[in-house]
Length: 119
Image 1 (cartoon, one colour):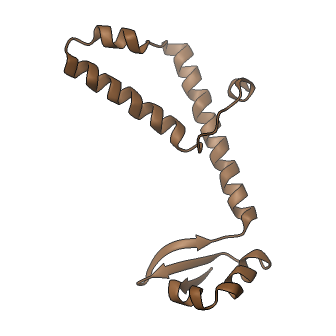
Image 2 (cartoon, rainbow, N blue to C red; image 1 turned 60 degrees about the vertical axis):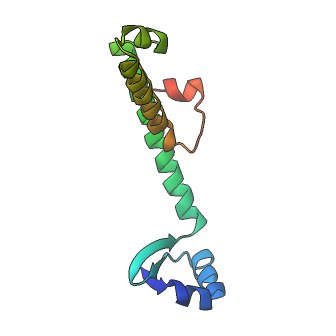
């Protein structure tokens, strides 16, 4: 894989774009000798995003299976079971963190019911 400094990339930007778009070359850009980013053809990006979508979908399906197997609890019930305001605050923060992690890789994509329930 070709490596260019960001300075070289700026100087040869049109050539870099041609090599990536037409020749399907992957080029790593460096700054101060450290790898910074990769410039890749759109087809490569589409493959990566498709893989991420599959991983997200499988994680969502696993979460549904776990909810079916172990059951769920509503936020109101969770707050009722927490003995102190601090416990309730911690529980709510934990739920929000889990929720953010569950959706962070999906790019905000909303899955259809059929996608989530495919086997």
